[in-house]
Image 1 (cartoon, helix red, strand yellow):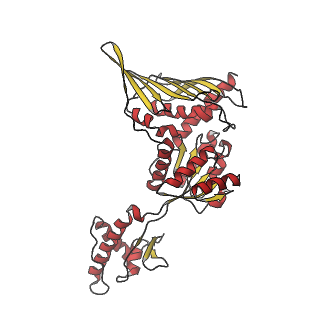
Image 2: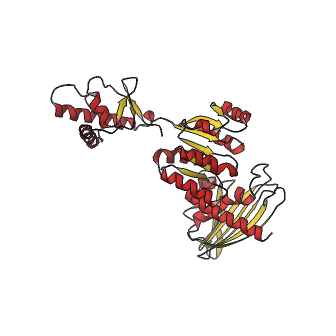
Image 3: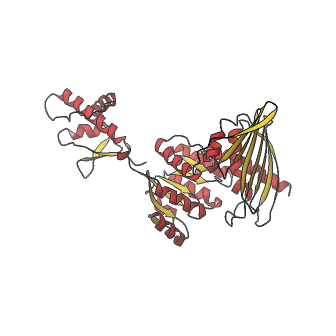
Length: 399
């Protein structure tokens, strides 16, 4: 993360004491302070403690005077530092988060466009092995094009990894080892072993690792979360035409994994078993699949995914003890059906429609800045990956 900086009037007080107290050193411009890794002395720590105690001051204090009573000067310095520190916490003084997009195919180019429009983001560059594609996206987003993601190391704080799934592990590992926070598009990796290694690296280095299960940011899903408590049966259909992309994975990892993640978020129980069937039609992987997921608490989820259907459909139906919720992901619309006076009645859930991917990328940037746990961290993504792999294994057994 870029460190905050501020313009200060510092000519009239002892700079060595002030700068040391907060690990600050003057840059080339003597009126600009930047944060650096400097260990304060004991005397400097005293100023630091005094400034922290005064950190609630809102009004600008009198700037400290050199000479005179040392204790008074120290208190005056501390008060002034506290004011400057609070000033630096304002958005106007915070540097932008430096981000890159690795892989600018269909989805990656959308990541790049959204980042380029975000006020708190500096899109440092976009990368693709097809440099012509990278340059085209870079021109549209007013940034630089790179053919190798390694050339971005040292220039960025965070990145979206939107390369083919079989490259997720190696690209993400290289970036994490170089201290870069990541949003990896789903599925997280191709194997659990790869996912576990990325999780370990991120945890050891205190880095944000978020995975792009974008439906978690769908306004309709967010609106019904409090209604879908203790579901007993869930039915999902995610159907669409063949995309001519993501052909390195089957429909379970391409599409169904979205709904697996949503279901695991709703059902607070472990998976007991899965039963699945699938068919290869246009690729070497399953292009249509159906899975039945049975949980230890007896909840059942029936999930169908297809990339062979002419018209797109993305719907989930959730049955709870006293209601039935029908949600359309595409329309961001939801109805809740209940029983009243021996009749079934329904009402539309109030939903403020939003762009899910935009919300996801903003949430990622916020998590990098605050170090808060993402809504879909690597741990949640690993759980969805495990269920997806179990479904694929069952499909192979039943082929």
